[in-house]
Image (cartoon, rainbow, N blue to C red; front, top):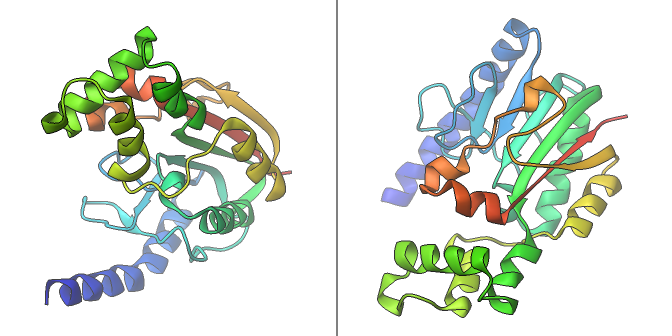
Amino acid sequence: MASLRFRLRQEYWALRAPRQMKNYLADTPIPKLQIGSGHNLLKGWLNTTLYPIEPGAVFLDARRPFPMPAESLDYIFSEHVIEHLEFEEAMAMLCECKRALKPGGRIRIATPDLKQIIALYAQPDGEEQARYIRWIMRTFRPKFGEFSPAHAVNQSFHGWRHKFIYDELTLRQALKDTGFQSITRVEPGESEDEQLRGLEQHGSYVGNEGAMRYETMVFEATKP
């Protein structure tokens, strides 16, 4: 019964979304889409999520075509979302992002870095790695001890229901294959474009800014 109620709520959210998006686009001089907003609703952005329970959030299933016109957005931002999609679903999402962006529009994606996750097992005695492992164990797996690289890696892959974790080369290639150019890696929170600065908030959500800075890589790219 609970699952049926939730499906009905999603259908209701999905029916409302096109009108909400249309109104936002009509009223906003610099339209900006956040995919997977969660609790991080950004002022001036169209904040979308699969579960729009926060006031002001709009339903969007990033695996499916976006219910908005082509070339209607100046910016797209997504933080710790793409890793929750199968690789094929993520490629479809990137194609939709390119379709929805205006020429010259920019996308910013923050996601875990596979290199950093693998280092938890390959270099567990490194200062950053050991600190991250202890945080994982104490916060998410306390009954399994204080220090386990294997548990930390498995938490990163399965504990948060991640489906595909990218390394730098793979994410760059995915952006290139879907038609983006000027693909650049940047530091979390930093950008040459003022519209894209200070957006990442996942560290506040999980309660550990240092851990998110350790694991997160951020890329920006431009639609030709």
